Image 1 (tube, rainbow, N blue to C red):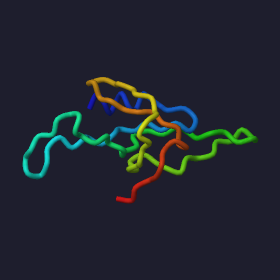
Image 2: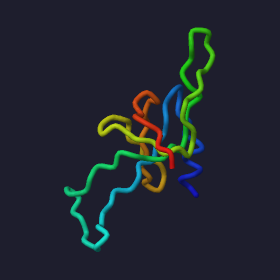
Image 3: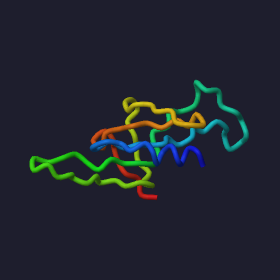
Image 4: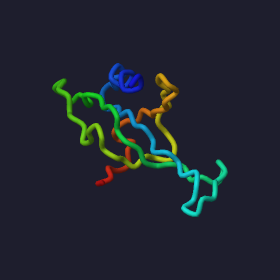
Length: 104
């Protein structure tokens, strides 16, 4: 509950998007525990907060094409790591850095 309140207080600016990465697979279907080096980097996450959008020449906000709750495909590198209460880890990306929106 504290993390949800912290997310509500953190409002991304302009075209920034706050994403919580999906958890890495740490165990195979057969029950074998994978060492950290063998785990693949997680390249998808869920959008938890968005900014109002970039401003155009007239000063109006251009709305983002993604919304809170969307599952997105992320670049392998980039974004800014943000740690909120309860040591929850999130990442801030620009909307243009997000590669795709996954239809679930």
